Length: 421
Ligand SMILES: *Cc1c(COP(=O)(O)O)cnc(C)c1O
Image 1: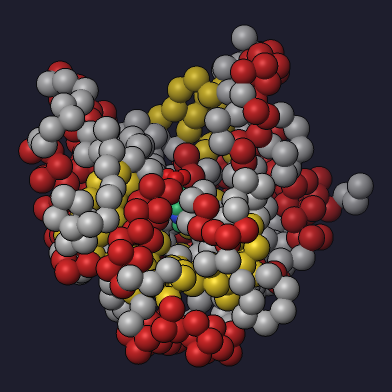
Image 2 (image 1 turned 120 degrees about the horizontal axis):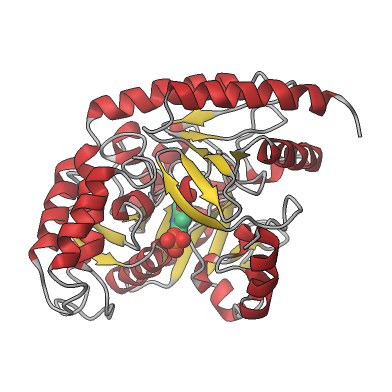
């Protein structure tokens, strides 16, 4: 089977031929590859072409593809059944490990995706505060819950506007949107809506619109304003959690949120999400409290096993090593003329433009150049995320051999990039 014939069939089954939109290569052009298998930092498509993976399933695979310990844990769990729909010891084991790494998580609930975690955390915050408005930041992605598919309306501190068809205007009205790195806008939003805000939600390391690392003072001020106004602070650490430190961005910046959401790494490649934090806030969740939230496959034993096996590998030394590696990979990226590669933890954002901290500062020319780079590297067997607004991910499987391969590919494409089309 060729990638192209599979894609043609996929188009008859799925919108855009895919199960999630960015996989469709619409941003970069061309058609998607279909993957057959993966190991370490590599994956192989249906035409038997092997790629160095710098997308890593968008984040969960911090140990690389098919890590033997994760596979072993999953195989052990599978022998005992796939789902019980009743409590099991593996949920407790993962919860214990999470509390060890993130001591501010007093109580938690497992769900099956990051979107679900965010959606549930927002409902918990609204139930706890008995308020309805939510504040979010432009350029932060929080999954596809209605309340989060909202951008700033025109004019200062107005109500949000839906960014997707199908999101009722009435829902968007309840979401206030502020720019990242905008101290003034933040103050203004709180002075206008503070007493009505159930929560402010932020990716403490925004990594879904490029990598927009914030001034820690901005996060600190957000923490203060939330406390002052009785709004909850939700850190959406679906990407940054268990990645930049054992306790994620909360530990790195020494800022404690009231609620936190995790996904991606926490499932080690299986569908898992989690929300949790203050015990008093979490006590509003059903059956303890009046906020309803449930899931047939929540706390799934096989997924719990994959998550636990992954988190057990993540020691402080691993984070040090990943930091060191990402510095070297960023340098390798920056061998490409005109390219800048801001990085943190195992996240690297290749951008043909220096120093961006706000979503609206990315220039379209930088994205056009990325699209060329994407295609050239793909031809050389290097798989970047298929959009210039996405960050590249490395893992502990991205070692010396992989870096050497990448540097060779970069050398080759740099010459071609220099020839103007
Ligand atoms: C990926 C992501 C989500 C959504 O998680 P899904 O598992 O794709 O639903 C939410 N928030 C952040 C910060 C993410 O990176």
